[in-house]
Image: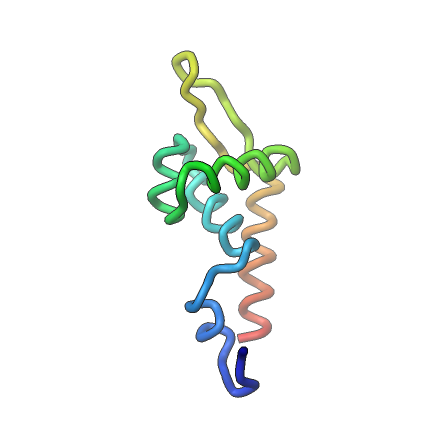
Amino acid sequence: MTCAKETFQEVQTRRRSDVKVLVDILVVGLKGAKKTEIVYKANLNFKIAKKYLDFLAAKGLLTEDSFRGAKKIYQTTEKGKMFIKRYGETVELIS
């Protein structure tokens, strides 16, 4: 249970929201990244990362480009960049 006096940062440090996980993945994907890099840098496991990656790709926030056969490179789209920007603005407003 949260206390009314807690700051947003205190709540955020306890557990990441789904939206924060999405943003973390999109930030890693800004320069293009393989799934392994996303898993490690966004602090996820492979099974959960797949669900988020599929969701982001379906929403047009991330692209999947084939790389040397079966390897995929995930790249944040312009729509994904706008999502990151708006998330940051929202956090700033409530902090």
